[in-house]
Image 1 (spheres, one colour):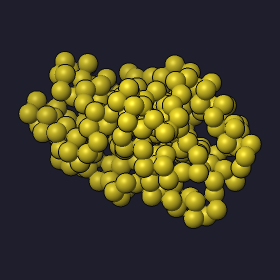
Image 2: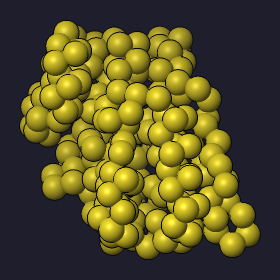
Image 3: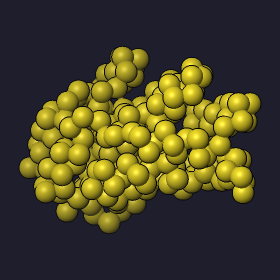
Length: 202
């Protein structure tokens, strides 16, 4: 039984930290895993920035409440779930993602959690495990499941390489250039076509 594993931000929903950056007017929050390969370094930077500006989890959640999936994403996930199983593997956080999962028809989501103080201050975060996306794909494969994976950032590369098939989706030029051996598509129609070719072989 084949399985599709997709990244979330930049693939199905806008980048949450970029939307937050625009909402609060602080450009430094625009840094994402498209820019910084070291996730722990990136999150450390974000936590310090939140502390510096006195911003808390409810401030981020208010921005997320007004967000919508990327144009065409809900229809794409619906079409995909008619064809095969879908799991979202993301480095986002449960406290961020829930409202947007409702707008995507509640696909299965594996992600992380932020740690908060009683006043909503984000004090840290808990990963499922280091390189959680890659290890999830490895676990699925250990059950004799053929896996197709797609994402857009540095933190998706190991997941894609571990899968039986996969591609980049709307990846920035730097990643396209440095990882030219991985196919890259730019529309949901193209992504669905890649997945359908994989399903036909598996």
